[in-house]
Image (cartoon, rainbow, N blue to C red; front, side, top):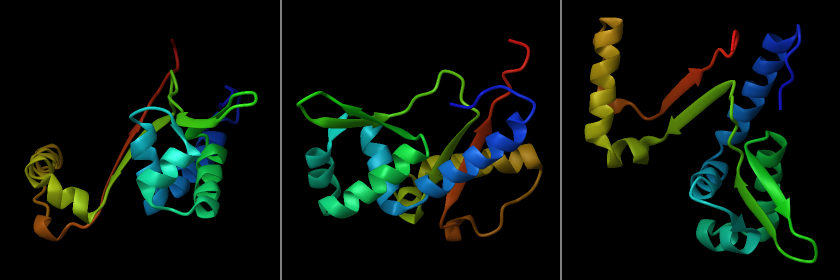
Length: 143
């Protein structure tokens, strides 16, 4: 995906920006959550997401271009989409919306408590938090 060269940091940033932008759309987030569980055909994704096929193709193409999912075409068969899992990712990002925070309120409170301990800072109005984004970056140098 990203070749190691002198310009790796710059190219990594461009990749991460593109991937985050692609993954931030609600329909694409729904697709990513589905393909995290396994491979799906376009028809299956259409049924599970309730998104019309033309619109679905648009969002799938954005995710493929951002290298977040793989498009697997079987000769004279169906096309499947699956999560692109890298052996050595540059970054992993998680994005939780208001509903996911509400549905997992106890776990989110634990996350807030952990952040407050690490940062030695009390997060204000945690009940009003409407979006959580968590990023993990990797350093594979020296392996």
